[in-house]
Figure 1 (cartoon, rainbow over the protein chains, first blue to last red):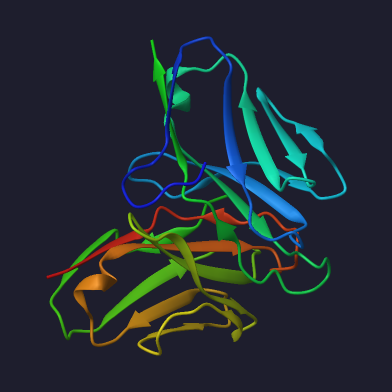
Figure 2: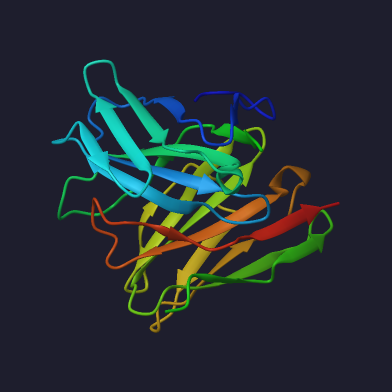
Length: 116
Length: 114
């Protein structure tokens, strides 16, 4: 899910299909990862998170997979709906639990377009 | 429970002016972070406040500053505006800003510098 400037990678899917959005993260020490959804004119909306001691986490219609070996994160959306159309960002954080959150490092985003 | 509230929603300024943006966190949240979002650079961390103290700062010039009040509300200020400061400025809040906490964003203030 990396890109530069306005040229966001775009994933176009048919309504009802499953979507997979990928993200390569940068810091091997990162231990907390989040997926956000951003619709036009709105701020990023929290979707799901995962800690580095897990490799899979499921939510409602969404699943996040973490592969620390290759520093890769993916978001799977089941039965994609038109309302899922948005830009999706992955974010990483070296959380060092109990300490300061520091800052989230965001990927450039992937635009998901759902065709009815 | 109300979400993160940012005001104003839109701002138009000219080069050289200064601007102040406001953020009210989710009730009970004591940590407030600010991010800048542009098409070219994406989302970049500006700074984070907790208990009226700046705990972390991103790689932005000193023209960007902020503060947090005792009620956890926060403001950020940009002085001597430049064209490149045009961006969506996002505020986010979390309970205590500890590692691994969920971070919730407002809808942002869209700043245009002419």
